[in-house]
Image (cartoon, rainbow, N blue to C red; front, side, top):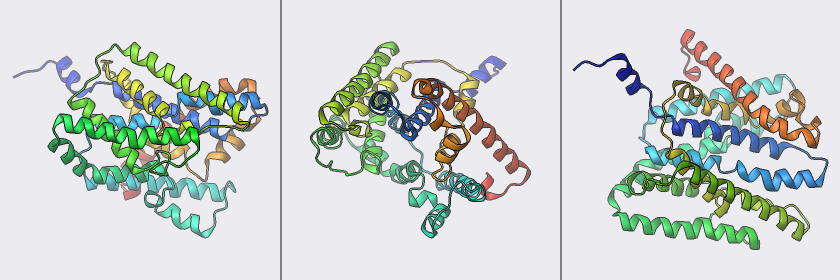
Length: 342
């Protein structure tokens, strides 16, 4: 059988809907970190951003795990070792630069931890995600063995235990079952199973714009609730931005479903999306983040009124810079195939 060039290209370029979501979510993560790092002069602006606007962005991490669930994780020690090597490379390289430039002076414990960042939660997402990868064969067996109705009941039970209970705890000030605000393997495993369920049994069927509207409404509702509740309590209430609360959970579900309904191919989108992992490692380095954004970019010198402009521009600028840095790393590996440069 013969194929024309158009057919061959179509086979090589995979659907770009979730690749576009990955790019958007990484921009959301950078924006969320900027809000967390910013010191606002006005209490009004502080609550507007840290209680309100941030709710648009906190769904990003959940979306990454949902995407993994949609496609399924094919366990491979080779892939895990490669992710660990890249993580260790950036942890040590950027960490060393931070010390040389006087941006950070670590104690002995932090130095030891930075040498094994995948195990010590120096990059918390990497630690939990690699754990999910290791557990994925058994989660996949669970998905294969459970009948559809039992699978559905399991997800409903998990929703009550790991979403509704933490949400009530956030509002009424008692601890959640998992005690980790959704930053742990329980939430990741739960989201992974939801992604698998959507792919196997319940593909979203509404139009994409409907899901995007739902996402905006639930995120805005969470933001407004936090702002109002902060004024009632007399202090800043931001607990609903935890990854295992109903507002963050539903926002991630609706945003994920919206992109699942899109259908387009773009080599450019796929190319940009492949840098997401590096963008996270570079911009979120625990020794460099505050120094880079405050000392180099001067984020803390930006007025409250101009912060929205920075919140729009800086994440895109960060992504572009990280693409350049990662491209240099890959070129160095081609010239000198050292393990940690691969």
